[in-house]
Image (cartoon, rainbow, N blue to C red):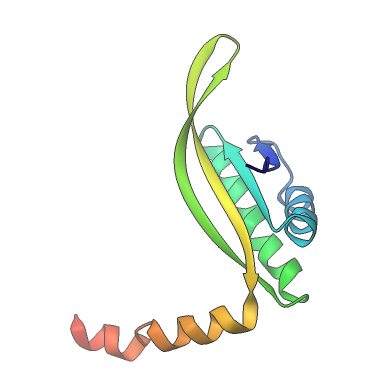
Length: 112
């Protein structure tokens, strides 16, 4: 099994800096994991992923992000963190597939 790079995001992390690291790892490794504990850290991680998506889009890369919970050992205490596993994928192929399978806004409005 290949190790995956883990980036720990705090509530004071700068989203643009995290996004740059995410984009670089997606380009070189094809995947990266972000871990965040607490609402501010989760907010910064989500913003960083959105920004990173824009960075790699120019290279024809899109992201698939899978959120999950993970238990971490910090300072001899167990803490629950949100984990965001981000994987690079081909932007053109996934955009076509998403467009074909996603309901349109008008069809969603008609259902309500």
